[in-house]
Length: 89
Picture 1 (tube, one colour):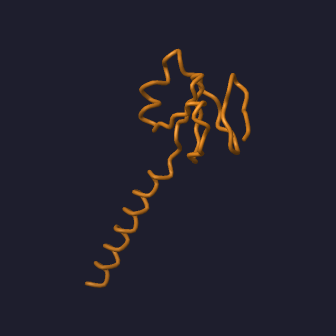
Picture 2 (tube, rainbow, N blue to C red):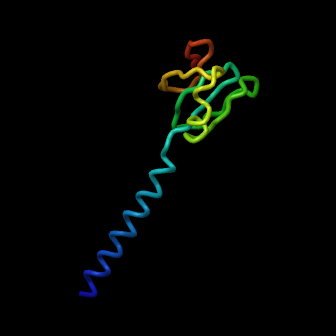
Protein backbone atom coordinates (compact mmCIF):
# COMPACT_ATOMS: atom_id res chain seq x y z
CA UNK A 1 0.00 0.00 0.00
CA UNK A 2 2.86 2.36 0.83
CA UNK A 3 4.41 1.68 -2.59
CA UNK A 4 1.18 2.67 -4.36
CA UNK A 5 1.08 5.93 -2.41
CA UNK A 6 4.67 6.69 -3.39
CA UNK A 7 3.94 5.96 -7.05
CA UNK A 8 0.82 8.14 -6.99
CA UNK A 9 2.74 10.99 -5.35
CA UNK A 10 5.52 10.73 -7.92
CA UNK A 11 3.00 10.77 -10.77
CA UNK A 12 1.30 13.89 -9.40
CA UNK A 13 4.63 15.61 -8.91
CA UNK A 14 5.68 14.75 -12.47
CA UNK A 15 2.39 16.07 -13.86
CA UNK A 16 2.84 19.30 -11.90
CA UNK A 17 6.33 19.82 -13.28
CA UNK A 18 5.08 19.17 -16.81
CA UNK A 19 2.25 21.70 -16.45
CA UNK A 20 4.58 24.31 -14.97
CA UNK A 21 7.05 23.91 -17.83
CA UNK A 22 4.34 24.34 -20.48
CA UNK A 23 3.97 28.02 -19.63
CA UNK A 24 7.64 28.71 -20.33
CA UNK A 25 7.23 27.40 -23.89
CA UNK A 26 4.55 29.91 -24.83
CA UNK A 27 5.12 32.33 -27.66
CA UNK A 28 6.04 35.97 -27.34
CA UNK A 29 4.11 38.75 -29.00
CA UNK A 30 6.67 40.91 -30.80
CA UNK A 31 5.88 44.43 -32.01
CA UNK A 32 7.97 46.91 -33.97
CA UNK A 33 7.96 50.69 -34.06
CA UNK A 34 5.59 50.67 -37.05
CA UNK A 35 2.87 48.95 -35.00
CA UNK A 36 3.19 45.54 -36.60
CA UNK A 37 2.95 42.57 -34.22
CA UNK A 38 3.56 38.85 -34.67
CA UNK A 39 4.24 35.77 -32.57
CA UNK A 40 7.58 34.05 -32.10
CA UNK A 41 9.03 31.47 -29.77
CA UNK A 42 12.51 33.03 -29.86
CA UNK A 43 13.88 36.33 -28.60
CA UNK A 44 16.29 37.33 -31.32
CA UNK A 45 18.64 40.29 -31.01
CA UNK A 46 17.35 43.14 -33.17
CA UNK A 47 19.06 46.40 -34.14
CA UNK A 48 18.16 49.11 -31.57
CA UNK A 49 16.78 51.38 -34.30
CA UNK A 50 13.98 48.91 -35.03
CA UNK A 51 12.64 49.40 -31.50
CA UNK A 52 11.37 45.83 -31.20
CA UNK A 53 9.43 45.03 -28.03
CA UNK A 54 8.46 41.65 -26.60
CA UNK A 55 5.18 41.10 -24.77
CA UNK A 56 3.22 38.27 -23.22
CA UNK A 57 -0.25 37.09 -24.21
CA UNK A 58 -1.89 39.18 -21.49
CA UNK A 59 -0.44 42.34 -23.06
CA UNK A 60 -1.84 41.37 -26.46
CA UNK A 61 -5.33 40.72 -25.05
CA UNK A 62 -5.33 44.24 -23.58
CA UNK A 63 -3.92 46.07 -26.63
CA UNK A 64 -4.81 44.22 -29.85
CA UNK A 65 -7.99 46.20 -30.51
CA UNK A 66 -6.18 49.53 -30.71
CA UNK A 67 -5.88 51.05 -34.16
CA UNK A 68 -2.12 51.40 -33.73
CA UNK A 69 -1.44 47.64 -33.84
CA UNK A 70 -1.54 45.47 -36.96
CA UNK A 71 -1.41 41.69 -36.64
CA UNK A 72 1.00 39.83 -38.95
CA UNK A 73 1.28 36.06 -39.30
CA UNK A 74 4.09 34.23 -37.57
CA UNK A 75 6.97 33.77 -40.00
CA UNK A 76 9.72 31.17 -40.05
CA UNK A 77 13.31 32.25 -39.59
CA UNK A 78 14.98 35.36 -38.23
CA UNK A 79 13.54 38.66 -39.29
CA UNK A 80 10.83 41.23 -38.72
CA UNK A 81 7.82 42.76 -40.43
CA UNK A 82 8.00 46.22 -42.01
CA UNK A 83 5.07 47.71 -43.93
CA UNK A 84 3.56 44.24 -44.38
CA UNK A 85 6.77 42.72 -45.80
CA UNK A 86 8.91 40.15 -43.97
CA UNK A 87 12.53 41.33 -43.79
CA UNK A 88 14.99 38.46 -43.20
CA UNK A 89 18.30 38.95 -41.42
